[in-house]
Image 1 (cartoon, helix red, strand yellow):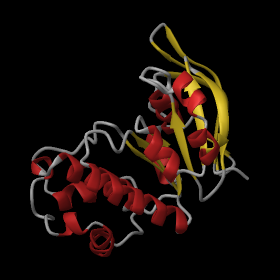
Image 2 (tube, rainbow, N blue to C red):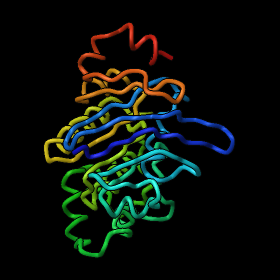
Image 3 (cartoon, rainbow, N blue to C red):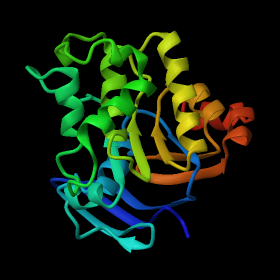
Image 4 (cartoon, one colour):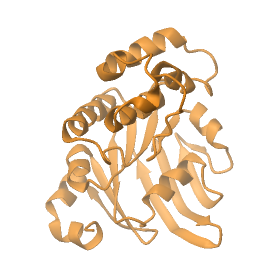
Length: 236
């Protein structure tokens, strides 16, 4: 059974029809890179999967359960987490308090103090700054905080939108190491990314979206080696 299976997904912003019958399947415990040019529909795809689009039709199944009629918080409770491109670190709250927000929609069975201690061990940069206001962190540290906030409830799958954007190379590499470690523990990752080469070196499989349609599926290694396909659909 696929962890996430999307079939015939259409989505709209107002009268603008953005996605046109998107279909893809992601197996448990793999990293999939969703790539393509800006405006191709990548972010809309993961927003639709998370229940954040004003209008979407088709089918989105998570671990075999249909999600399309469910609100975002219900999808989160089922184990689907989302890290938006703009990070959404809450001003006025410390790193610790931003992490606590990742537990708000859970069923209360997670021990908050233990969860924060555990997540801090995975993010040494955050461990040193738990009482610092979140928005005063560097851009890379804020991205790590957004990822940690998504991870703290121990989701089955995380949707990540442009996690490497604006981040210095050393932190990008740390992020890649973290994502591989997550995959090795069984967490499934869907990665929307403009840094195509980095994403393909990290991922198991790749999907290209162009003008709201899936135009290519392959192993990540195969697409990494296919420069013509990259130039056709991913070059700026």
